[in-house]
Length: 284
Image (cartoon, rainbow, N blue to C red; front, side, top):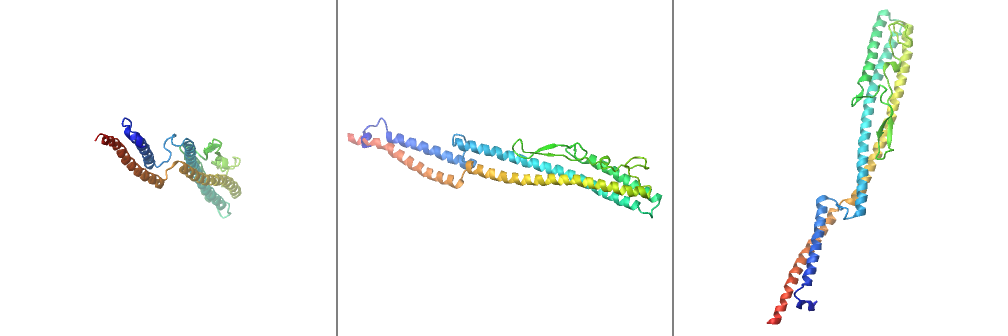
């Protein structure tokens, strides 16, 4: 605008260049912020819709991560319970072996009494294992761990109820007595009672195996939930990253481009500021 050069009270060209320089500087600062934080969206004002989506995905991802931790805790609890069950199973198997030994006709009363004492110690150990099998101070296989809900997802309804059965000596029906006067009690003092004990212990073993099967089914379900949660976390994070995270190559390219424009704007501003001096030539 050649005519404007004679109006020096308002340097329109310089004002336009200042506005352009200010805009470029703001854009450079924005891209540098993205490079510093690693995020394309740092405030809601940059992309309101994208910010809303990203925060929703972030909340879902964090909820899924906690649910995955919960599944891990549930697996740990079942591992402890399974270990207790397995130890008791070993004791029952040993007790059955002893009962089978006591049922042999070659043994006398002294030998059978010794075997009876061994089985009595095994039964006592069963109850001690039941008492000692705990998690965070809570009994697992004493009948108190019933219908416990584990939060296995981010939604309120995504729970898994777990019940661990009691396996003490009374429940397994492996109570011992010094004579046969106690109903259903194991007594190894005679060959006939030793034969009966074999049947009682076999039933106890089958009952315990059924309870261990339930634990195995719980663990299979948890493994499935663990795999599903892991995949969901990866997929959710991938979508959130695409929306919210910065593309460093693109951001750096934009900064370099804007820095060039910043230099040219400064040069243009210098030239615009010197243009009104041409008016002085009119007075020479």
